[in-house]
Image 1 (cartoon, rainbow, N blue to C red):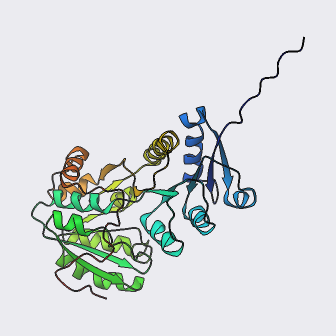
Image 2: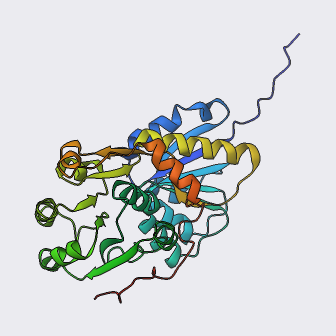
Length: 309
């Protein structure tokens, strides 16, 4: 007698899309593929070009990097999407060009400006103003600052830079008018030519710079909050599992996992008491600054002076 044929239900799929699978993209895709998500789902890694030609049916698409996110928004993809390895600037650029749908969520890996501002204020409790420089490459950098500035009783000094040659001339004035400075990843402002001069100038003026990466801190900035690839993987994995178990709910926020990096030599030379992550998080929780949408205010933050062009 023939044995009965057991019909197996096809395993549901999670598709991870990236422009290419190298560097951080490969590390994060591999970690997600080997995570607990693989217990219940078939996880397939696809290049953006392969996905565009095949478009397999998936319970969830995890996009890594700005290019896949833009393509998914452009094509009005209907399956749930969780975007990772993008910055807040990447997100705003994409959704301003292609309106975000309620099937798309995003986790940003760049430093949360709320955390950066509160860290600066805790390092310098008597500070009254914070300075920033931004360019046409980072037009959304100021968004989301207003709540933290108001809560920490800080005024914003903002300078718009049009080209790299302006940085060396304009940074000293910004430094003099600000108690500390928040830097952000913007190659027009901070690059291999300008960054050493900016850091040396700030050190001579005994000015605190909150950097945008651990590398910038190693080079001479005082501190930064940062998210590691492992932290981002944990957030992506937990968010994906929650979507698949409880149903998709859209959000756009910074990674909930982070740490603080200090340049201890610079901090000690400036006679700063280094703040622990627990202290920082306690202040953030008290002020209720962390929200699912960092763009809770789309206008430029209020300043005590007009924005200088």
